[in-house]
Every structure is written in C-alpha cells, then in structure tokens.
Image (cartoon, rainbow, N blue to C red; front, side, top):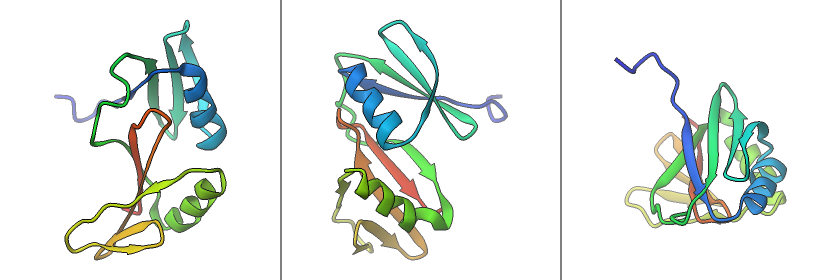
Length: 125
C-alpha cells in the first residue's frame, strides 16, 4: 500500500535557529520550505526532512535519520569532523571501532547527534 510512496523524516528540536545553523551550515542541507517559526523543511537527495519545534526534542534514544553514503563514508566523516561534528562511539558486539567508524563485517556506520540530541548516522550500505 505505502511501498511506492516517499516518506519524510521528522526531527523535533527546541530552538529552530540553532537547528538551522546545524542542518544548513554543518550538514549542508538546503531549505525548501518553512511554516512560520515552527517548521523548517530541508531537501536531502530526493527526500525531505522536517525539523520542527517541540518540547519533546531530544527524547528519542534511537537513530532518527540514516544517510546511505556508500564508499564516501570515510571522506564524509572526516569532512563533518572538520566542521565540528562529534561522533558517538558505542560498545556493540562483533563491532570494531576504527576512528569514528563502527565496522561490522563489511558494514561501516558513524553516529552523531544534532544540537538537541537527535541521533543521526551515515552508513556505507
């Protein structure tokens, strides 16, 4: 039923100005729409990410958005690190940490948080 319809990610934030600096200046996303002082809509590839003001910002303890970046993962992790992104390091079974990359067999993943604690990641898949 929904398998052929694009989905949109929604990220709750406390302060849209702080979020705007992170998503535009640090991650390089392009704003495509806004709804007053409550929502900023970004384009990421062919998808959209809604960043909206909420008192529940930062309460999700799981990954909220994943970017599949292929073999560019090492270069992108280095570029984001140069822009001040701090990567999370998790102790996971059968996973080896190589710098900021978690390596699980052929899969490589790097996790980081936005200013409100939303967990985001890059994956080479």
